[in-house]
Length: 257
Image 1: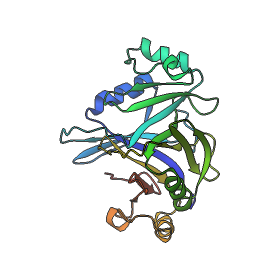
Image 2: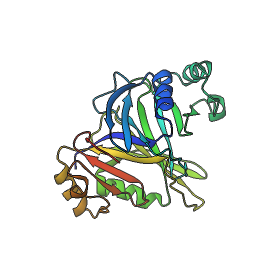
Image 3: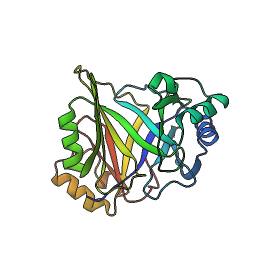
């Protein structure tokens, strides 16, 4: 199944505050917006995001609900050319000090957005500045998770890092550009389980033909969570073996969850 990882969705409680934060600190621009009766979706990314690069979807529900972060979703990571310079720039702009580069061995750093979503800052020599490098999710069985992404979505395992008490596995669509977003599967060795909360929503795959892609997923025994018919043939949803939601679409929809 040919697919591109198109976006990661997170829910926010104050859309104006979130838009101001991302456009001010990451120089994001609004790529698309959908205004519905009960919610608003806004897609954001760098001006020069790669054609296979992912964007960020902010979902704002109009009923003033609040959200629980949970721990099944971890963070998004954004690219910079120098992690120390980028972190200092954010601190000078008034972003809260969360995990500085020194506390992370000089390899990366973390900040949080106004709703508490964690954002990793990683040093890369490719991709637009602040573009999304990966989205991290936690899994309970590394072998089963890798198998699901490879078998069901047709992803490749492109990088692995195994530590004393956890391991990181990075997967992305076969043949994807270096600038494309990957999914980081974090596996902790202590056998813990995870709570999803509702502050994070899904990651999305862009395909050439929604119904054909759904037929392929069905043949590979992907969970029939929200099929194309139930979503007016605009998009569909399955879930990974760990329960993370995956949207499948062939264009940005006129309406979304």
